[in-house]
Length: 118
Image 1 (tube, rainbow, N blue to C red):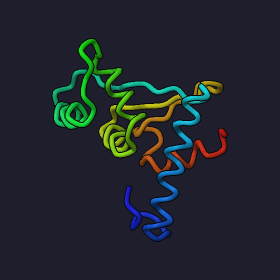
Image 2: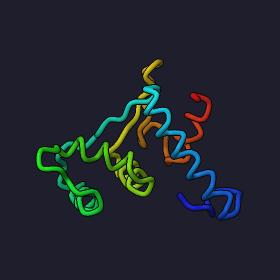
Image 3: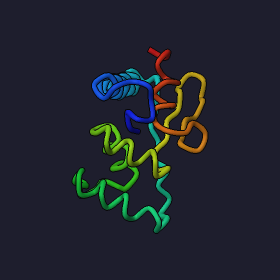
Image 4: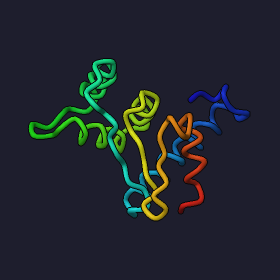
């Protein structure tokens, strides 16, 4: 997502983006949102997964699903990359509503949808 995709300036956008990511992490910690890996072994995803593995070192016993989830919780850049590649999804624990790129669109849309869950 880029500020030019919105009607706010760079500084406002960066603050909103950071606050939205922190809100997501808070909701995950409070068990209001759960995270799921959508990696399925598709070779077309290898480039994205290699980027993630280079940025977030894979533990010896860590499977790809755990790495994808951990990476999304450690960096908003990794989350955006995984989201845009359809490799990560979230679920509202209470309503069971699922959020993926396919049904929500850009990450900014997801951030807007979860604003009121706090």
